[in-house]
Length: 213
Image 1 (tube, rainbow, N blue to C red):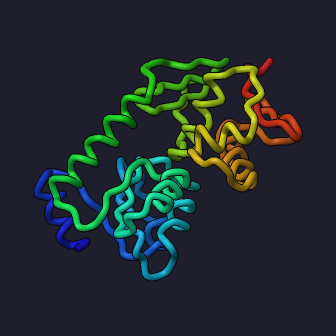
Image 2 (cartoon, rainbow, N blue to C red; image 1 turned 180 degrees about the vertical axis):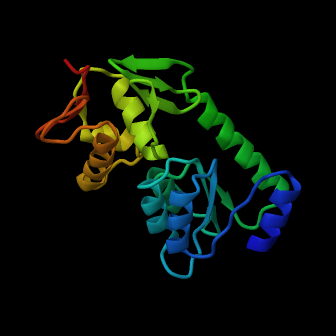
């Protein structure tokens, strides 16, 4: 089935990368950020639902779940876990292609066309490029999304729960995930938790981005 999907999508001018296990998918998504993910729940090493949660920790790419489980409770669970859409087997290549177009339209439409500036930090949301004092920052997809979300709300303390919901698109999660990404982001901004410039943690509440004095 995977081979047939690859042939069909390639014939429709899609560039396709494919792996056969959950662990390989995490590496693939982290190393080669995709525009859209098609996730089959019948994986040989991990449950597809758990894989979806793990993928959401490293990527916010629109994700379509391919499932044979035509059960409303299961579908609701997957959508709440971070899926953007689902498709029930068996399905045609034309049906899948239409679903891909739909989630990509929604994802592109959700991105505002504007430039966010805070001090020497300049973030172009359209081109997904961030610069600090004129030098382009090498950010992962998640780091960019986190920085852009905070920079669009300068001076406001953003609760961790809000970051999980809006940046990670999860209703719950581990605070350590946020802390790790904040640590990587601080390093690229030339600061640390002990000596913050832009990113300030408010203990027990959340994080705010401010213009350095």
